[in-house]
Image (cartoon, rainbow, N blue to C red; front, side, top):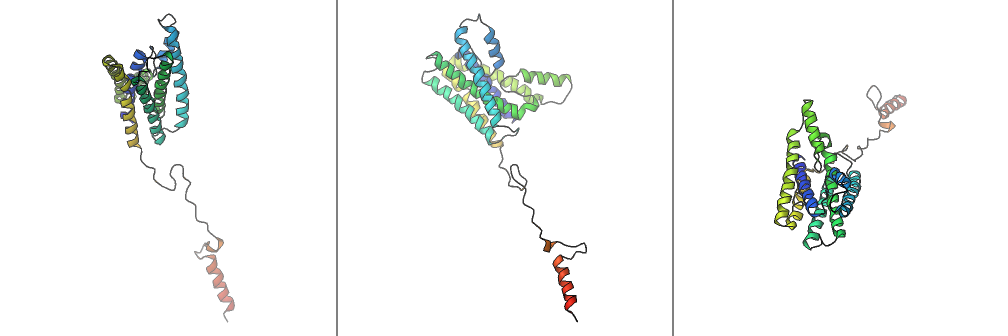
Length: 255
């Protein structure tokens, strides 16, 4: 799942670039940034921005809770793929709305797009939390990743430094790619996050192997133990109870 984490980090960078530059200056992956923006009351256009900020935070938190409940385990399963597909569908909906010209049509449309974008980012954040939480890798906010990187370096602990650095770089590259795409055409900026979302879903699907049908496999009851009837129980000498009774009967009827 290391490659998936890098791909999702790229998606987060591209998504935040589009949201900040095209959706009234909000973030849909970086909730810390939104909390800071929410306090900048003197910022131009604060009245219209606060609706998007509130939407992003509420949708992100609610979707994250539901996604974590939906995916309780820490290994990739079919539910992991489902969450990534949901994220891809949300990104596709954003692209579709922008393509038909609904993106900047009204403040309501901007709020809807913000909510869809936050939903997509929450789904991938839940996956990163479940699968890569122990490694200190996050894909939507890298402050925790940088902290884990420096903490393990200071304590001289072994760490997945390569994947952590790759995730940080991918986030920056995604944001840069998003800005370049938007400069060329905002529609390209809306389309860019969809590509890594689809790639991440496909990569995750290839890592899932069918469960082997073992008697003690996950979610299966152990095979029933054969029931031993009294007639089949053996005595310490090795003879069964039926054999002993037959021997005694033969002794009684012999002359």
